[in-house]
Amino acid sequence: MIDDPSLAYMHLTRSVEEPKMLILDHQTKNPDTSRFTEVAGGFLKADMKLVTKFAKSKACFLESCCNGLLCFAKIYGDRVLVLFNPLRQEVIALPPHRASYTKKSKYGLGFDSSTNTYKVVRVFSRGGSFNMGADVYTLGTSSWRPISKGPLCLLAGRPIFACGALHWFVHPYVDRDALKGKYIVSFDVGKEEFGWISPPKYYSSSHLLDLGGNLAMVDRSFDSHIEIWVMKEYKKKEWVKEYKIDIYPPLGISDSSLVEVIGLWEFGEILLRNRESFISYNLKTGVKRYIEILGHDVEVLYHMGSLLSISKFQTK
Image (cartoon, rainbow, N blue to C red; front, side, top):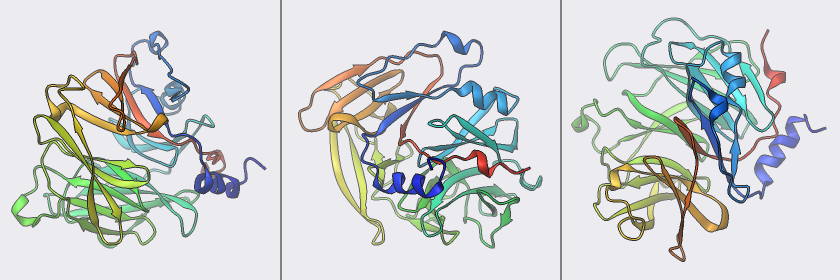
């Protein structure tokens, strides 16, 4: 009964659990030496040794995450992809895609609510910033499928899944004048179509995130504060400035370009990262608290656990 995919989907759509942060430790020399401080049950630790053992290499790179599932690729051979569910401690290998055009590949994991299926899209360059192709893999099938139109330009960073679509900033190497203000590339997971979104404003230090299920953008172009813009009406593509957070004072951060907003979590607070320091900040009261997370190469992600058993989707 617990393994029934319909239960996992019901949990996904009706879950009222407090959002948590997932800690990934990517260090390779001695993983057993890491220590993690858990605060009020707000952190979950993923056993990365399971992923690295399955991939037969410790050089794994997190490409994308969606609804509690994580997608990893091997750094030196991105045809090897694995899907990981930290809650159920399950890892499966995805079928290898076509060997051509493997350089500069970008991957995104998304959920199609119309069919209750997970899909992975691969975006690759055929040569040049504006000559891109794309393949799609649907979890549970045996092979990848090419789609007719890829994005119009190179993509940057890790995608953010929100409102049924994946989102990337365009690569900084792309000619800005040719984009006419449309600096965010979207991929509708259900329709399998790429599109454009104009941010409220764009600076190279901005970053995207999922904020309570909505697409959000952090503007770090100011010296004294950061601004968080949220797309409340996704179909209308309308941005609203939801938060303005002063960083010095009260947070004691002198460089806004180094601030990473990880996400909303317990007690109505927002988790921020400044280099190796983690700060939980209450947006209403202004109270801050430092969170100690020890590790040489630690990554913290906004995370909602998934009951989906992915082991049944392992292809032979």
